[in-house]
Image (cartoon, rainbow, N blue to C red; front, side, top):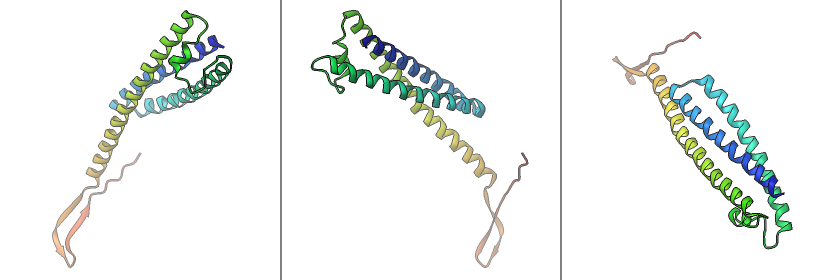
Length: 159
């Protein structure tokens, strides 16, 4: 069961690393406003998130099983404490090392997610700005009963 935990933890770590790599690609797509690449990346992110969810369920099930066999451990025991109960020192060290790597990968993915959110908002603001420029209101030089006449420039785009 401990080796299964090691495998699952390694897969989660790898998947988060891949998710961070997708975040870097997403940043580039947002900067260059490459919508095709962005759509592909979003699909890949969705698959990675589903995989992480599945792996986390597996990890939770393994923790539950191990908690039943090791005294003084519960499903809510901190991971580092949990790993200290591994049957060998080598396995304990490997689990702790993977846990630290996982923490780094998760932090990296979250930072990229936050930065990409800022870029996405900026890109949307730029699109909104240019749309507003195309439909800008202009005050006419004539006055009517209600005051100034306001006209809008409207452009029709064929696409």
